[in-house]
Every structure is written in structure tokens, then in C-alpha cells.
Length: 496
Image (tube, rainbow, N blue to C red; front, side, top):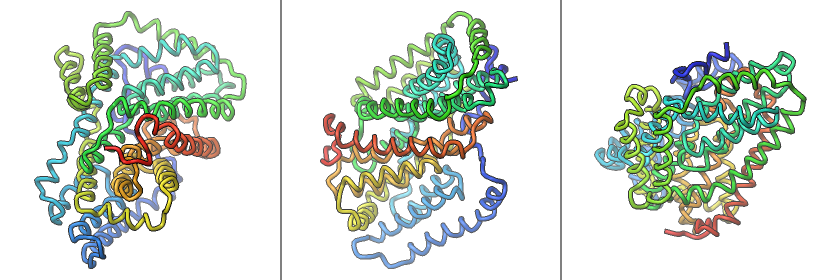
């Protein structure tokens, strides 16, 4: 049954699984969350009107107060899930114009942010990799070559998931690797399936994807969203190559720690993976010769990454990405029907609202007002960065990573000027930990798919997950203060 998931050249994961969320909560808790939704909607609206009708405190303009009211409403709905992310983002756009925070024309125009088009084009590139079978072929070949022993197979899944997330979005990596891992786990002998080894295989996919996803701007849409908020609010940006230079040492450290945790907690028993190896070899023999389409997609993707690294300052990330997508259509490597089934249009719309809201908070000085209030309670920039990064990581376990960035970054940028922080370093300090999630199934598509395999239980992940969360937080702060200054990212000096 499981082998059907990736047997045959035209089989692929259904599009609806690309953004799946697996709710593993008890039924009583699910029913409770459904029953309180009307109260959450009312609470958000009540907070909005209370702030809107209050007398602005000293130092806050009327426009800033209205921006804060909209921000509070959106944060409540984003955090509680009372409304879908996309609907809340669209609501922010409308309210900015209705409340007079900025002209409606200006608010809507922020949907034209470069970050929005970069994410859209990245989704299309990932669709070509998925539908032309390039990602599936690479995964099967690597697993067949390096997965001949239990630990070898575990390393192959882990490292390949991470490396693929360097170049294509996390949800696409999960869609490619998950059915193969499911087949491997289900092919094990019954005695092997009763060990923790199948759990290790699924965690290798999920943790590898999540850690690798922070390495470049392609791994997760939260990175382009952060750049969009940063650019629209301050005019500052981070190049593709500088982002990767800042993240790679942290990624290398976390991949090592993650592998040690996997082997220490989940791969401790001897298992026979002979049937799984045989299934992979059969699949490799069925792949046939490399097709022109696979080769062409690989060439387009490679040229695009090189162009991002060398020419993104001149042509822009979105400009290069869109030209790559045009090339895919010119050479008939992608169809519009495939794009429609792969692109998360809700995320695209949500980003427009989040970027507009961040810009409104900055232009109205509302972000600076919040930052001033927070600064009274925090005297040290080092402590501030530690608190912000830990908060982003904890919220990332239970919320959409995009919602975490949209909620925290505008306030963080206001704090940057107050504490003399590098705007780019501050952006990375919030965005990177939001993507490093290891426990909850709702945090990322990779985690959700890993849970859907049926071999994971949340209670088994609490201790190893906390170890990785702490390691990620400590590692980020060490890299932030010891390494980033060497590449001109501060974090304790504003560099424009």
C-alpha cells in the first residue's frame, strides 16, 4: 500500500497534502477551541475598538494609535487562529485605509512588494522540481547509494532533506521525501516497526527540512516576508549571499546536534532494513534514464541560484526569480495547471497584509512608541536580543512562522534604533528561530506530514525537542555575537 505513494513515473503527492496540518489534540480540546472561537472574534474586535476610542498617550499620534489598534486585532487573530491568516492579512489592508492610517491606494500598493513576487516565483520553481520528478529522482538515488545501513539511511534522509531545503521551500521538500520515508518505514519487518527506528526516519525528514530551511531565502516564506517588512519600513535589505553567509554556521551546528539527538533517543536498537533497501533499489530501477525535462529544470534552478548569489543587488531577488519562471514556461517545463495546484495563494495574500501593517506601524511611529515602552524594562541590548530570539522560537512551535514574523518584527525594528542594533541582524535574530521548530505537528508542513505517518507521538518528542530548542537558542546567540560582526551584521551597530 505504502509503495503506491511513489510508484510509477507520474505519481505525486496530492496538492492538498502540501500545506496539511495534523491536529493531534484530544477531541475535548478540539471541541473547546471550536466553541471559544466566537468569543475570540469578539475579544479581538473589543480590543480594537477600545484602543481606537482611547485618548492617545503622550508620544503617540492619532494615526499611530489607529495603527496599534489594527496591529492588536491582527495579532489576536493570528495567535488564536480565530480567522485564517490570509483573511486577517486582508482585513489589515482594508482597515488601514478605512481608519486613515495611510491612503487606501498606498496600502493596496504594498501587495506589489518584491518579497511577495519572490515567494510566488519560488513556489513556481518548486512546482517544476516536484512535477518534473527531479526531486524524487535525487532522493531515491541518494537513499539507494548511502542508505545501506540503518544509520546510513538515517543520515541520508536527514542530510538530503536539509540540503534540498537550501534550494526549494520546505513544503515541497516534505512532499518529495515523505512518501519515500513512509514506504521505507512500512517496508520494515514487524519487529523493526515496533522499535523507535521508524520514528527516527520521520524525524530525520522533519528536523532536517526545518534546520536546512533557514539556510537560504528559499527554504521558507518567512524569510522573504521579513525582508519585505524590513525594506518597506526602513529601506534596508539583506542580499541572498549575505543571508546564507549569516546562517550556514548555525545550520551546520544544529545539523550536528540534531543528528546526535536522533541517534541518542530514537536509533538505539539494532534493526534489519533489508526490505526497505530492496524497496528503494526497485524504485531506482524503475526511474529509467534522466529525462530532458529533469536536466533542464536542474539547469534553470542552478543558474537561478548563481544569479541570486552574484546579481541580486542589481536585478533584485524577485526579478531573477520571475525570469527563471519565464524560462520554465518557454521550455515547456511547467504548466499553469501545475502552478495552480502547488502555489499557496493564501500565503501570498497574507504577506501583502503583513507588509502593509509593518509599514504602517513604522510610518506612524507606533512601532517606535512600543519599542520605547519595552526599552524601559530592558537595559541591555544583549538581553533584548536573547529575549526576542527565544520568544520567536517558542511562538514558532505553535503558530504560523509567518504570523510570528509579522507580529514581532515591526516592534523589533522599532527597538533597533533605541538600542543601536543593526537592522539586518535584528531581522535575522527574529526570523531564524521562528523556523527552528522540533515538537508540534502544526508548526511546519514537514512536522505535520511526519506525524501523519503514524509513528510519532508528541509526548516522545518533548525532551529531545526541548534539547534542540535550547541548543538552537544558544547557538543563535553565540553566532549572533561572535560571528555576525565578522561579516558586517553587527548586531550591536547600525549599518545602513
